[in-house]
Length: 140
Image (cartoon, rainbow, N blue to C red):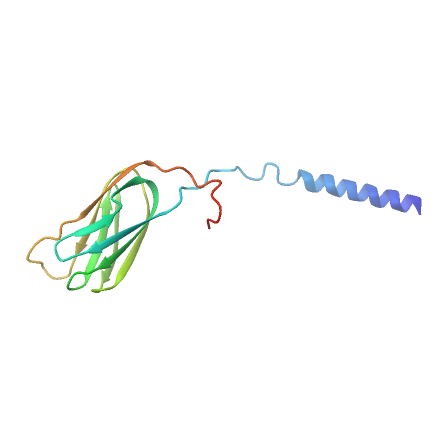
């Protein structure tokens, strides 16, 4: 009985050592990207507004509401990015999700028909990168 217990104990000890050695160098603990920032935008008949207009670089979610007459297509343009959403019907919303680098970006609203006057675009000024989201609880 004593040798059985000794073998079982030795077996558990070996298994514990093997399991403890697993995973030590499996991955590098890279910093997570910054927390996404939600921006709100409105398309009006004469202009587009987005708030906040100044923020740090990183992931953004731009939710824009069309309060103009007629459907509009929204375009985020700047640096090497051109992303479109829509057409957005009057009273409806659309979302653009991107990771923005430092620089200047425009949020434009266009339509399929020619407009009598241009809709003034919103300008986003993106500064230095925001801090990473390491040690932030309850994030996906």
